[in-house]
Length: 605
Image (cartoon, rainbow, N blue to C red; front, side, top):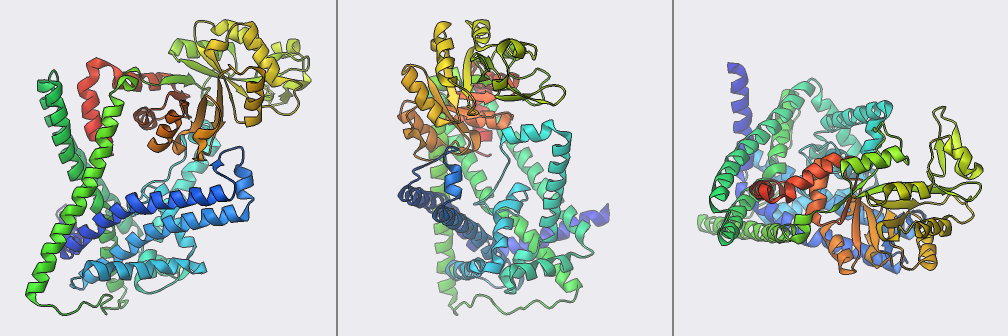
């Protein structure tokens, strides 16, 4: 135990020295890097991307034209350039940190501009063809494994909830997913020094990988343990600090809750403090991990008797002590101003969100649409599924419709599988024959749901129907169900046809990809895969007096995020959880918990 504590102390001491030696430069770089990235690089790149795609004839990118986009060479080049810009900017942070820690290791002070210039030069080598695979490591592999070496500009890449639901529903897919995650994590560990070799020794990416694996030989478990240990330790310290601050906030709020002015002042001042503290931490979070990796890089190189070039990467001009002192003052001033600007911008977003999420829309909460889960024991598109949605308190239930051989609209996908796994083509069977497979007619489903739950009727033709859209609308009209039904489709021409048949029928366009001015599509609602929903997009769609449906939202985190974004309808496979989360956020008796949660989840996370 004594030896372990000694190792912890030694690691912490060395890592602290690497961070501390050029700390002012490090802090200023991260502050400016974050400002430029969030306010210029990302929005600017996205704006240019939208403009180019508009010129190429794709002002909107959705499921309807995604294959056309990917088959257009100019579109592919535009996407590649966009990813290259993002990847380069993410890599620029990492190469700059490595250069900085290299100079700190050799006890050399560096200035910001020469540091950025050298980091930029080293990152620019990504333009060489043999280094392109490094983009995959920076943009996808490290963020996907949630490894803390990820650039703060590209912090996370995740699989959408609806895809994860299908993965988890299958033991085989779950096993494959687990194996892939483990393999990617192992790649990150084996390649952990590759960016150092790429940056410091001018190696191409493949050479850097080989050297990284060679350097790690005999140190795999040691490296894995200490990286995990320090990240866990930092997380525990943050959780402890969060807990203490949360207790303070909860105690104060219980005393002032009846005084609206006092609550507003507290939210402004305390929230600003929390935002400032954790913004500062987030600025150096990536740096802390890279300091640890750099420490191992130098230690293992020394053990292997590999000579590391000690020549200064950055040549500083000789300056008087007075000039150095003035630069330090300037560094401190600019750093504080930069951090202050970031905090102000974050606070503006945070408190604008607070104002918006605690308005009447927030108090009511979004509607909930029940979508059948692959893990559910209740078959989809059945009366049993509809009853379950009603019992769980969903506002809407999603059903599919198809047309039988004799022209009857039934609740089913065009092709289904029986228990024997033999596919059934609905258009080849009559409605009476389909009843034996527990497939209800649309008329039966509408009468069953009347005054109990609303329906989102999914129309996705297979091409074998005679009059799917018109016949579906006819059934809705015959059962007087127009007021509580909405037609939804991935197939936009079907929605256009629906508008011609009945201009009053509500329509929702469903898309898994939502880029460009999608709010201009002439429908009543846009049903968008949750990862494509942003505050700007919600505002734009609401500005056109249309609703935003978010699918498929299953995790507590994503449900909370969608509520705060102000979506109108949550499409979920877990209605009970969605209701629980929304109820906790919207019930007046939970106001203190809401504000507490807002302060410590929305600001910090």
